[in-house]
Image 1 (cartoon, rainbow, N blue to C red):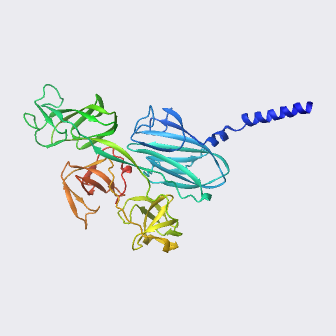
Image 2 (image 1 turned 180 degrees about the vertical axis):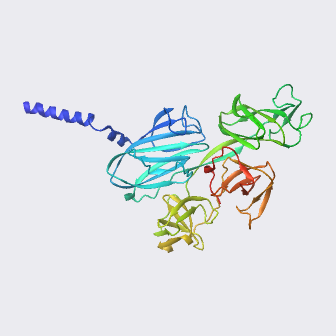
Image 3 (image 1 turned 120 degrees about the horizontal axis):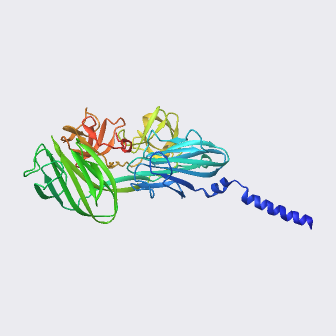
Length: 475
């Protein structure tokens, strides 16, 4: 009987130890969820605005806030998770707009880090030897402005992973102006007294140059106020103003842009979340001296998820070995196509296609499928299995940023002054939407009234506050 009592006690003690003395990290590792700390600043500083449990690290915030107390821009997040790894080498992948870094077991050096070298829209990866057991994964994310997304995953190389099928968010902007405006002009710069001219106008946008808006309004030292009530859908909108000189704007009584000071061709933007229904918009402006103009845009922001092309490439048994020191992988088989990622000499990647004359090869780089010039790779394996792929021309993506012509500037068909064709000319103070750039930012690819071409950055200034890293390299 005594032996039985001690046996029962021993079993109970063992069960107690099992459920109370085991490390809590193992329980967390089994659930494999993320603890997300969300900060209302870009630098992970201070106390998080909120903390929550996230099931997977795959977020497309678009132009929206991730939660209460955090803005739509200028925020950061720290996610931590505990996962159980088998011994071996693992490949970690990440895709982010704007910056992301991954650290294992609170190590000093991140295994992946795009802070300081933004790689928006590019899948980055790192191969890491992992010991068997539970490891802490920490992901730090930074959103500066504009679109926001973050994706992270990993897999053992022993499973021969193809790579992640991350969606690639893209943002488009559509102009909204569906109501008449009441314009009031004043013969002073302070909107004081009674207006000397009141009239109905289609938009606050004007280019008066050195002239008068009309009537008894002087050509210098005047001000104006435009008021409109417009019916809008529930959406995120980008309010954009460009002026010489000062400007400010209210929506439903809230001041979103306040730049009421002397300026020349400066552009100002603000993101606004609006509900469905009628909204009152007020734009105020003043002109001090010299040329006078005002450009007003209210753009509806739409985030579109675009799946990567050919996410499951066919295994042809053919491989490309990089012979160049650094080689661009592009979205099409020409030297001016958009750069997706860069690869290095000696690296080997599976070939999934080629063009008709075998001068370009389509390869898969950790799940990103793109094109490399045949001059800079050596092909091995079953080349007969590689079939020619149909080509598509990538359409320019509206970045939401503008450039302003500082003088009369040529819009060319390529980013060069030699051997290129002038498509159209932009006059001084004309603006155009930016859709791309060269790697050294010497040229902007723009959409000017439906014509897509290139302008020199020497003669076309990009708007203040533009995040150049968000503009794709297209030439």
